Image (tube, rainbow, N blue to C red; front, side):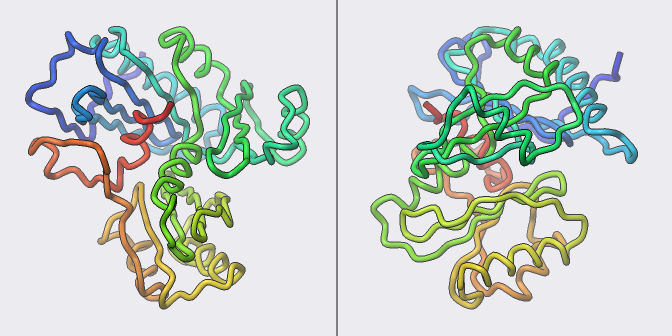
Length: 295
């Protein structure tokens, strides 16, 4: 039995009552270094709660051992956070990892997706394959979900919508660019030594990929590589950052040495928050919060 995991961050609206959960939406984000929850009131368009749990990293573990550890800790929190077992109006689960592929919608066949997946991905754990449309891009995300974790999610939340982190991020970026004459803009989401990069030009998705990095030099290398490949101007074309990155981090500081127009992606349109969330770094929970707006 794992020790009870304490939340590393928690923000709760003073008016939130778990007795009303059946009126609210629950968003869960899972990644190998932790997980987080967001509760949203769709009637008032109001964020009610955010909780984050971080897991200590141990070297030498296989991916299967890491996923098993995540599931064990996640189950432990779920079983102690009794309100989370109460029925919600809708439940969304997003997974943030690199075990996915992108396929053109026109060529996607569900019965062929496993063949396409194993052709480009090598996954060393038992998994379920699920697919989800990448809205506005005519692409389909096919991702692996650790089988025991998938079974647990389906047991606790049979009607939950399970998506990949990139699906949510692309959907929100597409909204930003819709009907706006924006030039090339790069978006980088950071988590657990993984960086997801999306590049838009006006309303067109020009690039979408993920990389592992172990040092700040790796991080900026991949960004500059994409800027160069897509003929982007590091002095003018903006870079938007979100996820596990702050102004004091080494990866943020090295970006400033090479990219002149940097911002955090932290604007939450059509979402109300009380003063209880004044200290919330919204760019760190951008996709978690926006997952509650998925349809």
